[in-house]
Image (cartoon, rainbow, N blue to C red):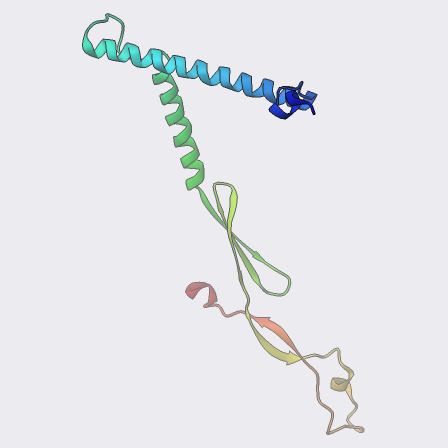
Length: 154
């Protein structure tokens, strides 16, 4: 039995090497950021205590804060933009789409009332006067019916 392999000390494969390298690079970048933050806080503390002639403002921190505030304000402005689009579908249904910040937020369908009207394509409506069939049911079809006031109250 290979004791090195059980303990995890064996030579890693190519994918594992790449993963370890990525973790190492991320760790180095994180430690660089932490070092910069520590240095900024050291400067700030020395400036507040009066033991340093350096300016109180951290090196890049205020610039980054201003940039982040500007980006956040821009994103909030985009998110606040609301657009409502109404589309009439072939069956009479109205599709109401609400977009917030350019993304679809909500969809609602408003189906109209349907009323029965004669379907004149059916031959039962076109019988001759000399050969009427009294017992024949006339065909009807349902069509969408929109009231003028529907848009005001819904």
